[in-house]
Every structure is written in C-alpha cells, then in structure tokens.
Length: 213
Ligand SMILES: [Mg+2]
Image (cartoon, rainbow, N blue to C red; front, side):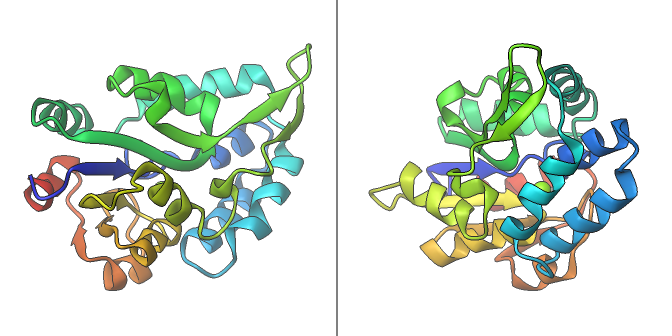
C-alpha cells in the first residue's frame, strides 16, 4: 500500500449521479441545478456561492432524500464494490468525503462496509412532517477548501493519504499534502485532469487501485 488512508468523493466518483442535481430533477429544476453544479466542480464558481442557493431552490423533503439514497446505490460506478473490498482486505483506513447530503450517502456507505464515523458530508434538517428546514451551514464541506479541512481532521499525524475524486473541490486536498487521483470515468473535467497527481478515466473504478496499492 502506498497510502494508509484512502478517501473517496461520492458524486460522479462512487455513483454516476450528482445527488443535488438528482433532487432538482424531482422538482423540475434539473437544468438550472446542473449548470450550477458543473460551474462549481469546474472551478468557475465557489462552492459556497452555489450550495445554499441550490438547496433553497430545491428544498428536498425527507422522502426525496430517502429516494436519493436508493438511487446512489443503484447507480454505483462499476468496480466500486471491488475497490472497497480490496482496500478493506489490505487494512486501509477508508473514508467518504462528500459535499453531498449525509443522510443520502449513509446507506451507500453501509453497503460498502464503511462505518458512519468515516462518512463526512453535509447534514440536512427536516421538520416533523419531513419538509426541508435547512442544512448544516457550519459544515466545511459546503464551502471551498472544506475537503482540505476534513482531510486534516481525519489525519492529524500526517499519515500518507490519497483522495479519489472528479471535481475541483477534490483538488483542494492537495493544499494539505494529500495526493489526489482525479477520476474521469463519469465526468472528465479538464482542470482536474491537468492538476491531479494522477488521472484515471477508465469507466471501471478499479483502475485507481494501481496508484493506491
Ligand atoms: Mg464529485
């Protein structure tokens, strides 16, 4: 193993979907949301400038977040189960670090045997009727630079660490000494292809293992 700690982005890395865009489609706001999400992931807009805007427009209900959790699992990228099983067998510490909604990602993490404590994402809040009332605005993952901050929290002693992801926000981990494997198997983003330490654009995620093991 070249790394002791291995982290994965979720949207467009473990699953083919962008969770928030998927929620937007359910309320017919899909096109607008995709433009905002893409702008953030390509580094054209800061994440904090789109995060609240997207959720305030969509206002996802608890039922929609539960449905989203199912879709994350059904649209898992090819090779994900094999990658996680291989890393578990090698004794790697594995985390999911996502700007997505935590409650929607936890069931996918459970499928992959990742403990709840190793899932880092943004909490969403509902009222007793399951209607949206807000999200954790203090979460570093809802703003630029947040993935770097979470990487430092996970790894205070500076173990060798790698993060696999498709977006601009994933590249930010490089600022705290984390190596980044850009993953373009779902969406190829030029900024990531150019700036990541390694880049993989095979459709099957197992292609990242040669850089990790
Ligand atoms: Mg992503």
